[in-house]
Image 1 (cartoon, helix red, strand yellow):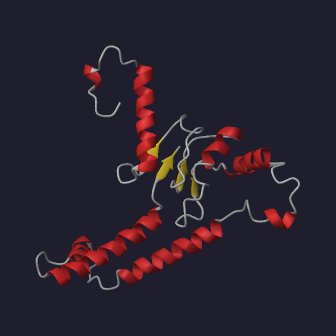
Image 2: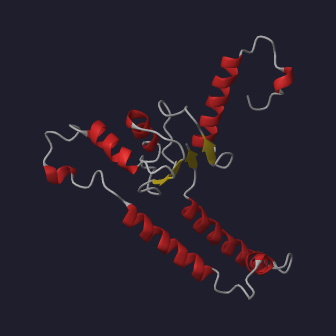
Image 3: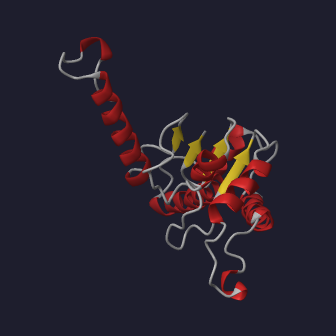
Length: 197
């Protein structure tokens, strides 16, 4: 459990209770305190009963199939206000064949009774949109960094985005805005919270 020394736990605090408390705290931070937890690594837990709409990226690095695979991809398919149109799945195990089978299995019949034009595009491959999105963000980042002096190494980037301390409040404000734009673009590219399997 977070915040307790495992060598000095109260006797009555069972292992099961510690695990449950840890999971509850991890979920709470991941969903409601993004500044305190942007990365969640799981193995066999949190596939069901866990809804985190802000979760944008899913990195799959274990074999999954059927219901488990379908549940895993559902971590990133939820909309989150106006800021999230779709999630990204990075598949290290070439599971997309299994993914298609799982989606067909668990969505078959889901659209029965609807006119085809009403459900067209509800389930689709968004890779082209994702690539376009990343290209746009990359172009904005390139444009933002055009003023960085050669040789464009760490020190030049620090000077470009931070300036010299204490020059004036107006100059400091310019650097704050410049850094703010950088952070916004990098956060968009990184996609906020990440869920690893």
